[in-house]
Every structure is written in structure tokens, then in C-alpha cells.
Length: 273
Image 1: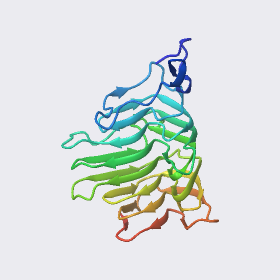
Image 2: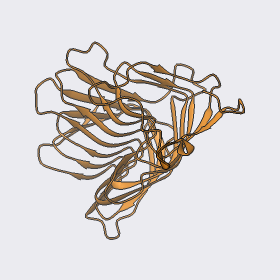
Image 3: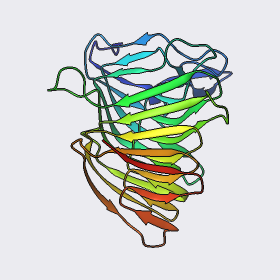
Image 4: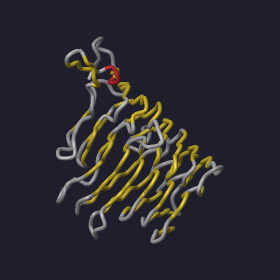
């Protein structure tokens, strides 16, 4: 993707179309619930700057690859996708993100779920979604660099809300090795987390060799890593190098914590070798 002057930048907020003299926004995001995007999306020039006010994808599925974008968000609810999903009997468990940078402002008001990469990660199938956030095989680069301000009713520096259906096999696994999360996350009424705003049932979140910093505030449940855990599993690998530097503001909050803002009943918190 190159702009009209063959420059490595693209402003999707300017894309318009007109019917009977009435202009509307032309860009609505790739993919839909029935046909989520599961191909490869990359650029001719690595690090191309994309200015967005909507996620690049509406629905993206496991098996997709997105590479080489530098997102400058103007109140988009997420940079990559509104929804990350999978399909029944899918052999693809992960979405691949390479050399992604996110800056600007994610989210816009108190009624919106917002996440730096994904607003929602949802699994309504018997398949597994496995999302690993961290370094590429080249230790000098990172898959994802976050430096955005995120705000919403459920707000996460990387993901807004993660949910899986109440089945024995419909599971979401997230392994966090993030090393460049920075910015401010603000939740309104519900939850705010440096990585994820709210995590629901049948989700396992593992902290593994992570090192990041964030400022988290709001009037709901504020956590340095996760705002609200609800019937989920949170694992810390104690033998790994884990450094979390957060400023969690508790004024006017329902609850606050350095790692987790609030853990509801049936939540499991484990420290493992």
C-alpha cells in the first residue's frame, strides 16, 4: 500500500465516498463475522504509517498474518481488529503480528470497549485461540510496540475484553512476553488494565519474561496487567525475568492492584516454575 505520491503512509480517515452529494466514510475495516479476514496483509515498505479512526480489520481470524504497519490512531477502538475470532475445527490457533507499532489514541468515550491491538478476543467454538505477545526470533526487534493512550468502558493496553464460551474446549490462551508496552490506559465504570481490561471464563493468561510499564486509571477496576479477572486463570512463571513498572491510580476506583485490579469468584491465580 502506497499513497498517491508513492510515500509510505496512508490516511484512512480521509477515505470518503459520496451518494447523491452526501459523503460517508469509505473505510469500514476488512472482514465480517461470517467471513473474518484470515489472509496476509503487509506493506511494500516496512513501518508504513497508517492513520486510522477504525480498526484495520473488523473481524480477523486465527491464521491471519499482519506485518509492517505503524498505526497512528485517531480514536479507533483498536489498531488491528475489533474482533479476533476462530472457527470450529480450525487447525490455526494463532494470528501472526510482525513489526507492528501502535501510537496515538485508542478509544474515544465511556461506552466503547478499546484495546491497543484488539477490542475483543472471542472464542465461540471448540477450537483454541493462542495469542503470544512478545519478541520475534530476532532478539533486536519486537513483534509489537505499544505507545498509545487507550480509553474506554473496558480498556486494555493490548486487548480490551477476552471471552470464551462456557465449554470444556473453547479456550483462549495468552502468553505475555511484552517488553515495550507504554502509555496511559483509562477505564470508565468497568475495567482498565495495562495489558487487558477484562478477562472472562475459560481464558488462561500467563506472564512470562515480560518487562513493561504503563499508567492505569479510571473509576472501575484498575490493574497494572489486568483490570478484572472473572472465572479466568492467571499464571506467573516465577523463574522468568518479570519486571512490571506501573502507576495504578486508585482515586475514585472500585478496586486497584499492581497486577490485577479485581479477581472475582472461581478465578485461579497460580505461581509456577
